[in-house]
Length: 437
Image (cartoon, rainbow, N blue to C red):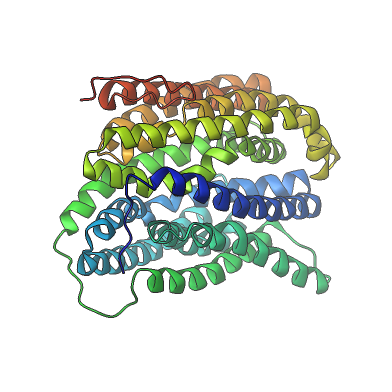
């Protein structure tokens, strides 16, 4: 098997792949919103808040299980496919798969005992579900990385974005037929079961896409894989903390009900970067391949196409949400309309994120992951201080201000670093620059 990312067709693939990615995500987001509405209406604001807090903790603690190896897979698989090094590709697949599985078992046990002992803000009854969800979420990220490198863009998102929520809807429907009441703890276990089924199917697909499980494997570059994965691991921890910190701190400083309201607003605001995320599912291997060839012009074209398409889609999504978010929020329950002001604040951060394009990817996929880590860490500090200061006074609006401010900080900082280090304007303006270093 050989997959190459050549200069003459990379932009065509980026645009074509982004539409396939977008279509898959439209279906996935639709299903995830059905799940959210079912859970919020069944559990109520407080129960949905407890579910959201527990899921936030689990998503943070999943990251040590991945240990940045999904990014190592994304970057090195692109290089090995570019040069036809199948033995190293097989070694990478086996090494990362076994490592993520082992780390997930350890982290699952840790999160169970921490929660059961009352050391997280989630109730002890949620400990089993939190522990069960660690492995499938971690493995699905690895599955997506390998399928993206195989240019199977739809498949790379199918298992996590579509199959997992689809299965959860089916499981929730089966639970409803039993006429038993649904608690936050049961909902989390059902979420984990759906993810486990999606993981098994996705893993089998990824192994086939990478050439199967047979043949010799070369593990000699394992030090390079770890050398990249460790700073990426730290970076992803900080990124996920940025995503989940507001909900967790609302659980500590306000109430589970506020966390539930905010979670609905945050989920809607994430639609702003829908186009950018769809493009990111495609451009990672392209950036890694262009960097491996030293092709700065191609990097600039990828950045320009990503930012302009992503920002255009974000403007349309923002306009739609400003006009129609209130009735959409009320689908979660009548009380969720209170989250509209927080949503408006979150939209500002989302627009900034879309405007700066693929800045974060351009740093992490070109060997500048340490710099990205420093920027994300600074933004996390901003978020923590603002959440701590604003939540007691402004509740979910304060959390939204903290989140939007941190998002603006890290996006602007990374845009500046990409301009300085790569000589590329990664924003939607995409002005030509020179003097890459």
